[in-house]
Length: 401
Ligand SMILES: Cc1cc2nc3c(=O)[nH]c(=O)nc-3n(C[C@H](O)[C@H](O)[C@H](O)COP(=O)(O)OP(=O)(O)OC[C@H]3O[C@@H](n4cnc5c(N)ncnc54)[C@H](O)[C@@H]3O)c2cc1C
Image 1 (cartoon, rainbow, N blue to C red):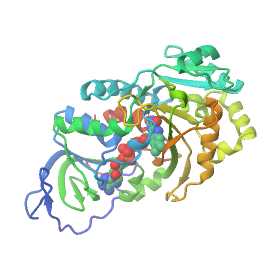
Image 2 (tube, rainbow, N blue to C red):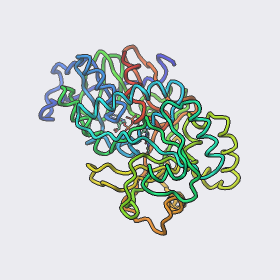
Image 3 (cartoon, rainbow, N blue to C red):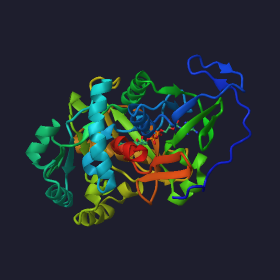
Image 4 (cartoon, rainbow, N blue to C red):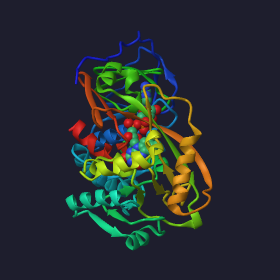
């Protein structure tokens, strides 16, 4: 990665400093607050780095442009899909799994250890799961259709069998992320919200309100990495991936402890898509259900955990549309497709939809991580695939250590 490409020239700085406690401006000319580590972005990637740094005894500040972190990290399934990773992402995911369990215990964040169930409704899907479980039989188990129904608490329509991926975890993202931030604040991390960062250079971060100085700067702004470092984002081929998500009542109040993958998931996650058997599945879906590919559909769901303000509802998703600029238009066909497929899977005529939203994450054809050093002491970190909840807590260790 280049060391100098993409540094945004800083504007002339005429700033008022903001005291952390009151938020009131103090005259410029006062000595800027100095930190060991300044982190830009309070999503899961920023928080993961803050946690690592504060545990190493460092003085840490997190700068977040919004009133609270409202990006990808609170819009996802809360699915820590360790099992579905391969290569370096699997190493990060395994490490992150331990970190999530420790964080859950330390911060009082509920973490479900029920794993994931992958449902196979085609022979080609079963073949992928058989090959996958054959390679990783310690942590994954093939299920018959009857075992599948038993584990899920309902019988998916036309299921032939499946697999239980035991390593996977689940959190309630909208509450877990603020709880994580609150835990860090208790540990001494300083948070400055509504602090839009305009520019970063070695030892110095300028926000629209103030300037901070820090020995080390971590820029964890997700898909907006191109706003601060366009050259680096271009070099890594970063685009925005826009997703649709739907929250619906669980039919007949069913409780589904594990996360649920279907055949489309087996083409999206590396641990499955790299199997030899995946090619036949891809061909079959392209031939018989091209609309799934057109909308980048990955049919999967998780159930909101009991402490969630939406307890018991199913989080259904998702679709994937790519572009440098996020299109403002959501095609109704995407949602209809998702809902039709879920009704079919669950064997229900209606699903009562309670909320819908879109999410955006960074995506790149060059791999799932952008880690670049645009200037000495400055690191830009972005997860450029939809696996930040799963791997960020492992990635942070490798970036900071
Ligand atoms: C719908 C959806 C479903 C997903 N499902 C899963 C899943 O189940 N499992 C999984 O592992 N991953 C999932 N992902 C991916 C995962 O959510 C992301 O990889 C991860 O949240 C990225 O974290 P982040 O901290 O980089 O980004 P974000 O959470 O977007 O945080 C970036 C933060 O930076 C702030 N920021 C940006 N620019 C500035 C600036 N100039 N100054 C100050 N602050 C700034 C933003 O306001 C934001 O709060 C999903 C993503 C989406 C969208």
